[in-house]
Amino acid sequence: MITTVRERADCVATFRGVSVFLMETLARWVPTTPELEAKILMGRHIWEFAQHADQFGRRTHELRAALHFTRAPVPDYAKALDTLVSATATGDRIDGFYDVILLDVASRYRSYLEETDTMVDEPSVRILERVLTDIDRMRREREAMQAERPDLPRGPKQWLDALRRTVAGVPDFVDYREGRN
Amino acid sequence: MTATTKVVRGVTLWRDPAREPCFDVVHHDIEMKNWPGVEGEAGREKLHRHMNNETGAIEIAAQCLADYPDAPWDLRMRLARQCADESRHSDVLLRRLRQMGGQKGEFPVANFEWGVTLMVDDLPGRLAIQNRTFEAGLIDILGTLRKVWRQSGDDTTADVLDGILADEITHVRFANQWIRRMTEEDPSVLLQVAKAVRFLAEANKAMQVDEDAVDAAGTKVQELKLQVEINVEGRLEAEFTEEEVMEVLKKAGFQSILPGRGGAA
Image (cartoon, rainbow over all chains, first blue to last red; front, side, top):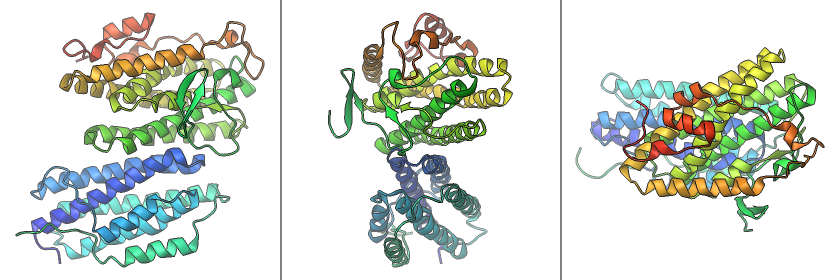
């Protein structure tokens, strides 16, 4: 259970850190991805993650941390994110991003919703509900792009499975601050 | 030339962003194909060129996000929004192009804006070139082109350009606001801006062609010069000062970024 304000701040700060990372990953990929439809998809979603990071960043201040307080996830999870960034083929990028990391992040947001007090922490809950709706839409938009470009090669199954296993091996990606609550 | 740069007419520019094999990427306007007016392939080429320019604008804003992680968060938010706007523009132009029987790669494309902007290694300089110069120029061009399309009877394309114009005004406005703010906080930013603008002027000068030059379609370049009206209303909305707008009627101006001098209310 997530019970203290400090724990909530650390979680939300990590959500912010991951959102910024996802925004920057897409930003880095846009100029180096050849396919126009994929570029357009990524360009549109950069703004989605920026908005998520912004909302999380405002919430951290309400949770008695700094405005836009940001935490990197635990090292094992950060390593998985670095693996994603290193992808160069469009199929690897799209599948790794939308089918592995984004799905995993969404499941962690849902876990938070199950573990926090939904009355005491209602503002965080509302933000996460909106973010999850956005993620569902982004994944539908990705499917629509893929339907428009059926010629785009998919990411290699072995690589995707390895990435999936790596993130699944991290039970909690929040790197909590030491000290008293 | 290095792994990241190319030399065009003696000017070192950033190497082109990734494009699909269907695109013939050229390096100078003279290698493009262009025809006067907006009928048939002339219209499709204009949309195709515009689509690639919008794609370049996504890439420039995205690269700024990647290159400057320590920029103020509110400015990064603006750049992120710009990525989404430019993506919508590319998308809507691609769809319109297809509706008109065109396709990606139908005409050559060039990435001059990317090539120049990415040579600048500070964010104020990039904003000065891409948003405050290229996109401000687009305010004028779109203001004119939407009339041309409407006069040709194509209200659909005119309406698309009208929508894009509104977004571009916001991109120029945030660049004006942020350059002004950064310059007020640190006057040395003005030197970065001036250096960037000087580089752009040199690059533009090197790309000029003779009056009798013809492009890859065999069209005389002089015949292609669109009589672009300065979009005074659009520029004022984008928070250029009245002085600057007056100045741009003669030539491009950068007066408002001088601390204590500029600033529309």
